[in-house]
Image 1 (cartoon, protein in one colour):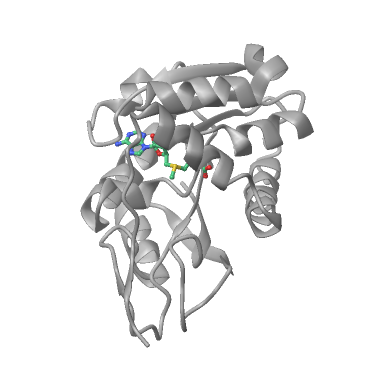
Image 2: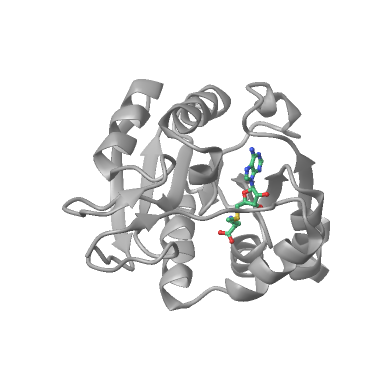
Amino acid sequence: MAGFVGAQHEFHDDEFVRNWASRFVPTEPRLQLFDLILAEVEKLGKPDAHVVELGTGPGYMARHILERHAGIGFEALDFSDVFMNVARETIGDLCHRVTFTKADLMDQNWPQKLSKQPDAIISTWALHDLGGQEPVADVYARCHEALPTGGLLANGDFIKPDGTDWEYEPGRFPIDKHLEILRQAGFKDPRSLAHLEPNIVDPTAAQNYACLVAIK
Ligand SMILES: C[S@@+](CC[C@H](N)C(=O)[O-])C[C@H]1O[C@@H](n2cnc3c(N)ncnc32)[C@H](O)[C@@H]1O
């Protein structure tokens, strides 16, 4: 059996966004991804790290991290006002620790909109939505420019698993290609920490995501 893996989104439509947020309340494997990313942030050894999340969406990872670390300052970047409103609701009483930054990751000047230099840039389930390898490579390059030496990039995103016969939308591509473009952007020793919810036989659009990490 073979087919196509991909998804259509309407990130600026209130009904679509609220449905998406309620369909994708984090499951156990997704919480595992959040914890893998949080552990990498902790390894920086900076209790007051400034963490920027690209494509924050409903704010699930933001809330997860803020609840566990009182010192972390968080910057939630998204281009959708609707998703940002949902994130404000999710983050609730912890919003005073969050800077909400509206920016489009397809605009190469997005790093200039950040409130301060990040110690870590993190993301889940977002960069594949930029539509291909080239825009993801551009984001990796901008992240490398924005981070200090020793800064962390952690991207937990959908990939095309090795050995599949299925066709994947262009934003979902193999882990090895991610590692190659991270190296090209200047990151040292990029790695994949995990391939979560693997399924090459009959995958859904919410399976097969990796935790990719790299240090500047
Ligand atoms: C599928 S949702 C994932 C949300 C969240 N990261 C999560 O894992 O639950 C993708 C998010 O990326 C945002 N996004 C997509 N394209 C973007 C772009 N060009 N610039 C900024 N944000 C973008 C969307 O608005 C949405 O919030």
